[in-house]
Length: 316
Image (cartoon, rainbow, N blue to C red):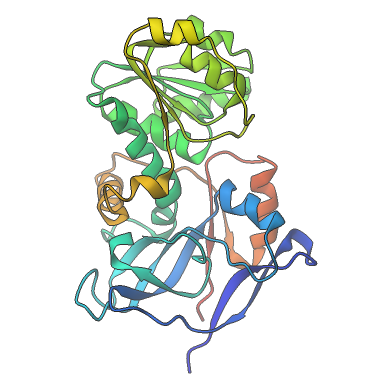
């Protein structure tokens, strides 16, 4: 009989995350049973784990092999290599995944590369679409060394945009330049945002003064997409400057809401296709066995590395 293990919250354990035995998932007709090979960590689920109740199962990103195809005939076949997305519980050896949240992997795309895509690649892809055609447009990406920021830089550059990246330290400049940034704003002085503006689109993940400065730096018809608050929850901005610029807008972005418009399967297929074509390169800074989940999660929250962390799941 096949056994199953998963990452669960244990508030008494060091790092608050442990691996323990759980039941095998029961699939619905529109779900495939996936044997997970790689998972990726995100700050959102990792931060929640610190305060979650014992037994809660975190995890959004996964990649692996279809152990049993969906009984309704939808989605990838048994034995197919896939990338998938779940609202929780993806960090396990076996998971049931709705086929609308699964995409087949090209042979040249690794499980590690694929696992970075759902909660970093999809937000970048969909956020950039909020301004429409980007050819020749000026795009600012704040929090540019994070997973979403790195993908946003690459995808904006692929769309023909002129990309400005914001980083905290001078030693991070090379990272964002390698991703494709044309200009780099260094440090926490958000006045520099204004000096390098105006911007047709801002992908904003910091909140606080960064959001305020971004709103004040928009060009006419400019859009600021707010998708994070890693610096501060609250922001005070110059309302007059914002609306007198003309047809500017602030868009509140939640990935789960965006997926009501387009399924994760569609977006993930687009992103894996770009990786296969050599046009998109996930930045993986940490790769480790999933037995190191607590340690790597702590490093992620402490911001000790840029880009993404991927853990390989033991299914022996």
